[in-house]
Every structure is written in C-alpha cells, then in structure tokens.
Length: 327
Image (cartoon, rainbow, N blue to C red; front, side, top):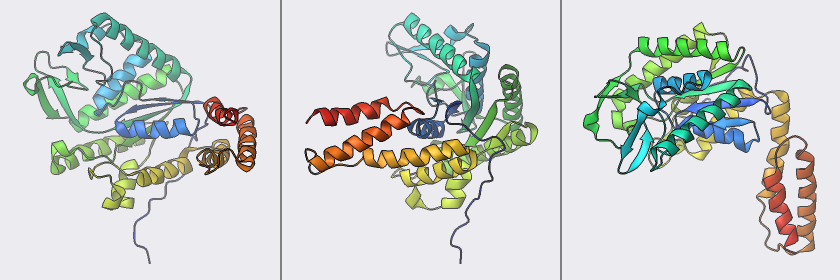
C-alpha cells in the first residue's frame, strides 16, 4: 500500500560535473541549492546579486552579466535613510557612499561575467510573478528597499511577458555561452503576503511559463522542486515554524533528488567519499587528548590530503591540524 505519491525524476540529458562551473540566480531556493553545491565542493557561484524573486528582474541581471552592460547602472541607485541601495540588487548591497556602491556593483557584474563564461550550467529559480514598478518612471524593481509603498505599483506579470522575456534571455545566453545547460526551477516557498489564493495564481503562471520554456529550448530542463515539496512530501512536518519554508529534512530530500537526476558518476563517487569524511569531521570526542582520538585525527588528516588532489579542503585540513597541534 502506498501512502504518498513519490516523484521519480529521470536522469538529466546533460549531467553535471563537480569541477565545472554552476551559476545559480534567483529566489531563496537558488541560495539553498547553491550552498548545498558549495558544501559538496562543487565549483559554483551562488546568487551573486542576492535573493531576487521575479523572473524579469532575474533575467535583467543575467543579461547585464552576459553583455557586461553597466551603462544605466547608476539610474537604479536610491538613497534611503542615508544609505544607498540599488533597485535591481538585494539590500545586502548597500553603502553610505554612492560611488563606492556603484563600483561594488560593477565588480560584481564583472566577476559574474567571468564565471558564467566558463560555466557548464545556469540554475534559474523563479519565486513570484508579482512585481513592483516605480511610479516615477514605470521601471520594474527587484527590491523596494523599504521605500514607501506609494512609490510603486504592484501588479501580476502576464504569461506572455514572462514567456517572451524568457525567450530573449535564453537566446542571449546561448549566443554568449553556446551549449550551456539551463536548469529552471519554481521555488516551493509560498508568498503569503500575496494571500494564498493569489500565490497560487502567481505560481501557476511561473509553472506554465517554465513548461513552455522547456518545450521550446533544447538545453533547458525543469527540476520539480515545487512539486517535490507540495505534491510528493505534502505534509506540514516538512515545513519550518513559519509554515512556508522547507525544513532541513525536506531540503535533504530535494537535494538527493537533484543529485540523482543531475550529478555525473564522478561527482556521485566523490560525494560518497566526502560524506564519510564529513561525518568524521563532525565527530566530537569526550577525550580529545587521548591517544586513540589523536590516531583518529591522523587518519582523518590522511584522508583529507588524499581528497585535496580533487577538491579544495584546505579549511578542513587546517581544522584537523589545529586539533593535533593543541597536544
């Protein structure tokens, strides 16, 4: 007897290497998956512009990265309570000095351009189809930065807007990075501030747009993170206390499904060995000075030196060496 509807995801047409670049951009789920890839010692650039929720703002930044377009960058800067922000970037990008922030954003775009040019894949995560537009010029913003609500108009993107903007962005991506793989996801995190009925409308638009993109672009695959949480797990025990975000257990499940579909054999084999080392790194001894524990640390150090031929584990080596030097 089955008690849940499990989603079985077929292997991706192009599987991911741990050592080749993976560029993540979008909502907080892009951040979660990017950090998981970092922990797996993958070569990844995680949400370089902070959390961005709507597809048009995500695509705008991606196009700026590809074309190295900084011409109108200063026009998006806004001052709030003595601090400068940018409407296209997360509020973590801020500074009291206009020119310092502008230079910071330019460097971020340049670094992202250099990374994406050598990447094998881009992971896009859409969060909401609701957008905010400036009243003064009609330009869409990614973040309001606590500017008074009267300065913006909130509206729902149309399916045609999302589809056409996606088409143009993917076309540009293939022009600048031929053969690059695109992994598209819809964030499973619900936007309660839109109300649950309107959140459903928003997510439905994103899901249809993602389906159309998958049908129209050969190098694009859809990863069903949204369906894994809402349809496969489908239980509030897989949500944190806010009843919106997935628990670590749910994230683990989605991560395992992602690896099964996307990681190549070499990546999978490395993860198996790395998981064993991580468990040993997390071991806490009641008697750290004992000969037995010191021997354990020596063996762990040997494993780490061996892994260092494949991945950057210098931080872990330093941690173990400090424990050994304490004796």
